[in-house]
Length: 137
Image (tube, rainbow, N blue to C red; front, side):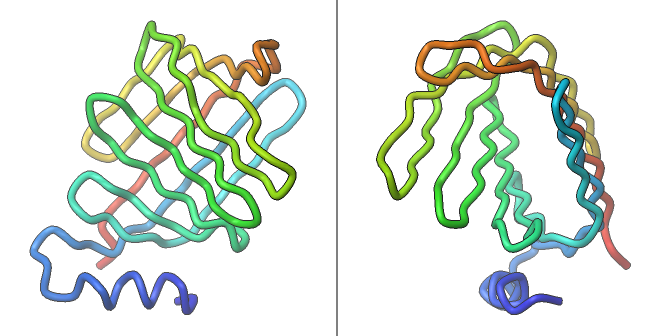
């Protein structure tokens, strides 16, 4: 277990809602295909994992929030059929981003989202994010 995940795990010891989970995640577009297989932590409705030294946090609620932090902060919000503003903060400044969620499907252990990404009011691409997770025993 990485130091960052171990620290997060230790912060929540004793919480009835904390679980170590196995994760399989993928993000696909016309130009790229990124996958992650590993472990993370689920605390109530928040899943956190370390994807190649990028802390990824998924909040599963009425609006799904995906946040990635490294040398930047990327935060997108997703709800089916709705345009939502996001946040992309770099060392060079803030970049205006927004998403339009075409399809969002969630179950007890999966999440699938198809969304359009706009940067500075310009369409970039359509992305498909898949997340599968299970309690690690």
